[in-house]
Amino acid sequence: MRALNLAQVLERTNLGRTYVYQAIADGTFPRPAKIGRRSLWSEDAIEAWLAATFASSTPEPTSKKKKG
Image 1 (cartoon, one colour):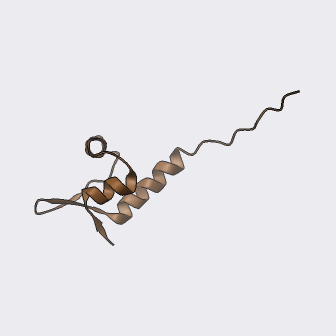
Image 2 (cartoon, rainbow, N blue to C red):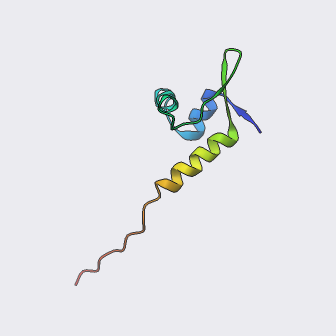
């Protein structure tokens, strides 16, 4: 398991700092472990969150209507 700092989490998720901390408060984003003054996230937890987010937001395929 690898630990990620906030900058790495933001880069990996393409989210902003404010959004991440609000989602943590809402209970919809993994909580970091506090090590001294640092907040570190499990890479596995972030990957699982990304997979679940994409799985739940994958749109259904749409069919194109043919003219004529």
